[in-house]
Structures are given as C-alpha cells and as structure tokens.
Length: 119
Image (cartoon, helix red, strand yellow):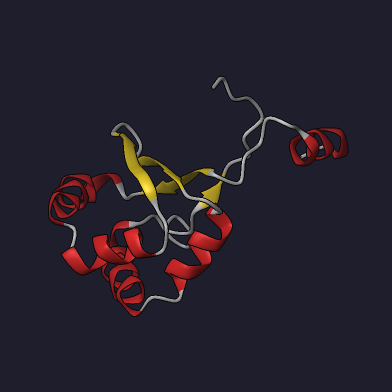
C-alpha cells in the first residue's frame, strides 16, 4: 500500500470505530459444511458475542472462491474484538473452525479500512 493511500485511510473522517468489516477465506470444498455449521452456532458462542458488545453481526459468502465477508457493529469494535479473543468459548470455536479455512492464514480476519459512509 502506498504511503499516500495509507495516510488517506488512517486520516479519513469517514472511518468509524463502531463498524468493522473483515475478510476470511474458506476452503471451497468445505463450503457446504461451513455454512451448515453456522446455521447452528453454539448458544454460548452467540451469548459471548453479545456480551462482548457485538451487534448486527453478519457473514456473507462468495461461493465461487470461498471469500467470506464479515460485518459487525459495537461501541468500540477494537475493544469488542479484544474482549471476544479472551473468551474461552471463542478459543474452542476458532479451533473447530480452523479446518475450514484456507491455510496458513485464511482464518485470520483481515480487517478492512472504511473510507466512505452514507448515514
């Protein structure tokens, strides 16, 4: 990323600490099972997300290549992500989900920069 672009993305007034969008990459041959598991997310995982301040959490899928786009809102998304990473149930969930992601890092959320927002 160029210095100019990096500066624009870090200084834009359009960014918000209340919204977060991220990418994951699921192995295409495991997509059906991955989507099915998300139809029955553990209740304790759902509760942990809520308790950590995650709201309006959605996952979107591009089936052609397994690209997953995640979006959520929180009062402070960085703090909400940190809080979630400290949850024991999240550690177990991530261990279960690791088999579905393209490795070595397809399961690491790549957080995207927000540079425009129309309220």
